[in-house]
Amino acid sequence: FYFTFSLVQDSVMTASKATFQRDGLPESVVETTLVTYRSVGIGLFGVVMRFAGMPLEKIALFMNSSQVSGKNPFRQSIRLTFREGALAPYRVVTPASLTAWFLQYGVMGFAFQFFDHGLSNLMGVKPMYYGQQLMEPPQQTEESSSYKTKFAGKTLLAPMLAASIESKVSNRAEVQRFFGPEKFAKIEARMARGAISRAAGPAFMSNFMRNCVMCNTTFILTPLTYKLYFPQEEKSMSTLFYYGLGMNIFVGNVVAITQQALWGRTLDYCARTGEISYRNVIREGLAKDGMAAFFTAPKWFSRVLMNAPAQGVLPWFYNEILPLGEDSALRFVNKYIYTSNVKVVQGSIPFIPVNEKAAAQPLANIPWRVGKQ
Image 1 (cartoon, rainbow, N blue to C red):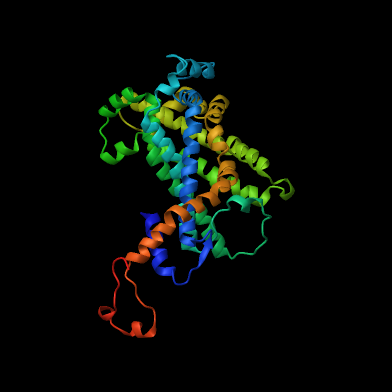
Image 2: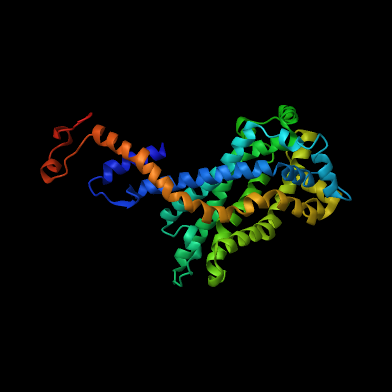
């Protein structure tokens, strides 16, 4: 709807000016095309990487649940992951999981771009750095305190809004993979929850907090610090790859693992009691295992194994690989979608002559041309 609207809007409002910005396309169509292209690309990337890493995901899920405790937690998690065979981790993947992965990564990319650009336009500040901008030297400019406050507010708000949408489309499928489809259906039948809560899935808040941390790491901290503080002479595709991986491993996941552990323990508590209580989960975890309930080196390492292959290289994929196909995407839209739609619009939208005589007439007296000419 938004893409079609941008075509009609631009054809009607700016056809007389012919202010084409890139590849023969108006700026509004370019923006819509690139956001869609990047979102689909991130979605497909997420599906491939997450499916390939399902054994690592199951190990991490068990490591951060109450089913594993005491000595050799990593060995316990591996045994639980493969207790029903080598392909057991893949059997919990359903079409809903594939769809959720695509939406999780695609929506995360789309939502962040949408909110980042929308809030930037609303507040009159620049959007986050992207693509080739990361390789350019930072500009030394003096900004007002008002501008800095607006930029900081936008920078905090955009990933939070994006993470909330990401969790909305992914949490339920993640819970299903944690329990397995049949067990989850039985647990859900015991829970007294409304339609909105059921759609969001159990333990939504801890899932949102984890995604908020990782969204900030991927789309804010990594490009911002790389742009401003990484040595200019060392900037390249390879250094961005390793820098993004390092930020994911040693910054994002160090914080996110606490929320991942809270999410897993909350689901275990839900399976036992049929309800969600973060207070009771935290109290029980601290009483039984202390701080190790929510953070240990093995928990962090398992989280890194699961998350780093997909989320850790995402800044590199987003800023270096996706831009390589942008011109092709724009040419495709210009040739097969935009041009044909412009012809349809020009042949069917009422034509209003723009001159002083026409402007002085009442709308009812203007000779409207409707239909194909």
